[in-house]
Image (cartoon, rainbow, N blue to C red; front, side, top):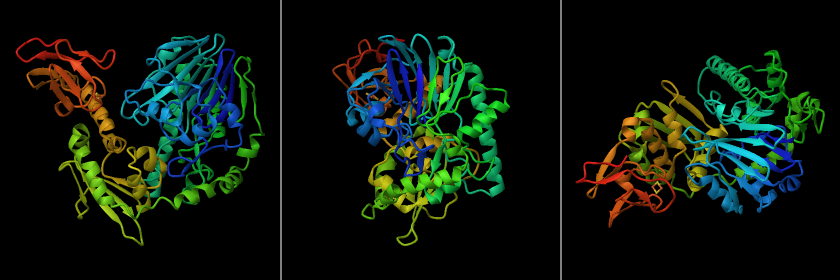
Length: 518
Ligand code: FES
């Protein structure tokens, strides 16, 4: 087995039974904020795009680069697809032109003509943009686990399959915390230092559990080439920076008595079957890490002009942002039972523009309404530029985590601790996603999961077996058949059988019948 680094979370895995390219990402992501580090645009992507298989772990834009996939990956490639409850990843890949998919159940080992693969799909609302995944590969000689930025609670599903030879894991930050928080510098530094230490400690726990012969730190860090974000690069000797690079991490790993770490640059080639796993680099690593500031300045000169051009298209003065957000968010707020209870207050969102004036809104999770800010006290506050908000609204961006928040082009304040529900709401700005997340939270509560409702003379489970839409709202019964109007799936109520898809049966019983099928 041969492993070639392609930058960030992207690698080419070559075996005697076929090759896999994972998560190819080259174009700046998140409002032009993130770039792969080191630069990987010089690789021969057309040749790489001829691989046998493509694996896209999830929809975060530093893993799913639609433009790059469209241009450089052959469309008759076989896509190894994580089994997520929502179809968005598959839909977007199909839109690009991919047609051949292998979609195993999570943790099912599949044999592809001698190449065994297993994908573990994580599906909680906090995993990626509703889903993140790891890929395990066995070619008969070596086993590789590409965990990228997934966070499984344990690795036993992989370690039970035999000793791991190559383990690819994220070590650097991929979040906006704490940099965007409006806090005194000292407090922010302390939080950043704790975060950086925790990231490294977490990898050590994973590495010790995986017990792999060799470890490749991947899936980060990004670099920030926009002058406004330049300070986020780890070039100032600041131990509270959450984006340490591969060299820094490998040195830390050695200090912790682990010498199995290997550096993988874009174009580096590692022979996993080599007992020493020597890595051949395309350039001397010192040309990148020796004077990292100079390296980034060169990179900035090459790549930033394209972002500067794109930025000019972000403002949409023709969009009535307040009216659009009210119309868009109000039904979502009404449905967001668990999130509203979890937030239990107002979220203020200010989009600033010195010339055209600010937009200042409150999302009130108690009254379940959007209104203009009128001086009330709120627990959470976001501040960004008006042009960024206009872009999100004009494009009807349903995931502001996967666009604005990861861009770090905003600032935040909060009273009290981190509230997962705030960010989950902003990544679920469509009825489908919101219902999925609400259903997920419902199922976390065993009592609620058993909840049955009465509908037109029948007793049925409250949540749709497909993607957990609330059947009180989406269920319609006609001639003994229940239709969930979220995606139109149907169930025969007499025996609960799903008429649209295999599995997914429904608990149902006539109201006169005391018994409810388990
Ligand atoms: S959520 Fe898809 S059919 Fe009900």
